[in-house]
Length: 274
Image 1 (cartoon, rainbow, N blue to C red):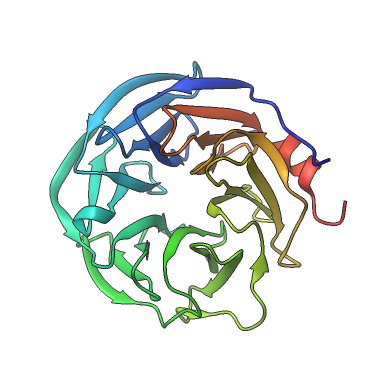
Image 2 (cartoon, rainbow, N blue to C red):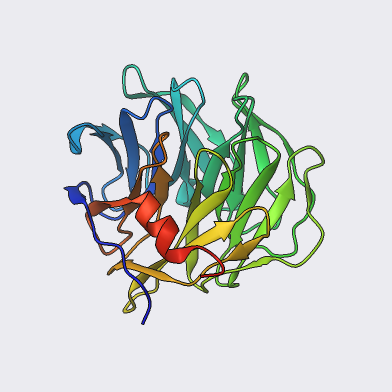
């Protein structure tokens, strides 16, 4: 019997919530609602939606810049990434063209680049945040159909999730090449991941239709994942608060809620080697 972590609270959002990102000050969570073409902005102090931002068709991944001023939103159906000004909570300028059905986005800790995981590519385009243009791509990874990405807090590596491969690949940010060695083995319906603030562990969501949603704890030193931790009926995107205490998890296409859990309870329950 696998361990489980109960919900602390459940927050109603739009239809089909997918990506989740939390501002660096921990005060707001941005949630993309794929089914309602919107982004819900949650006040984390009250765990209520403060405002809903209308965006382009079918938003998926979302990432907030380290200065908290912008949120980058992927739109796979449109081959583009849009930018939200988080002060006014409005979409700014023209969407950035990114081909290959962009799905996940992640910003480097220095705020200089946004890496994009695209479902129809085995490379990661990256956007220069000063110009908001694609200025290059990484070298090829061992797998395509990339659905999720997150960058370690020290900015050295990106963890990339290929769809349906039961593994996570690691990219060296300095060289833009995949790190040699075996991939990290996880659940076969892996979707998204988030790092704890110290970078020593990550939580990864895994969810298939008709099956219980799971979290996997990844030890970034050993590149090993622990046993599954059950977290309810569905899970898609995930973000951990800057204090490392809570995790916000979107319900995915069949849901209209975000679930909040104790990140520390999930870490304890799923620690590799237990």
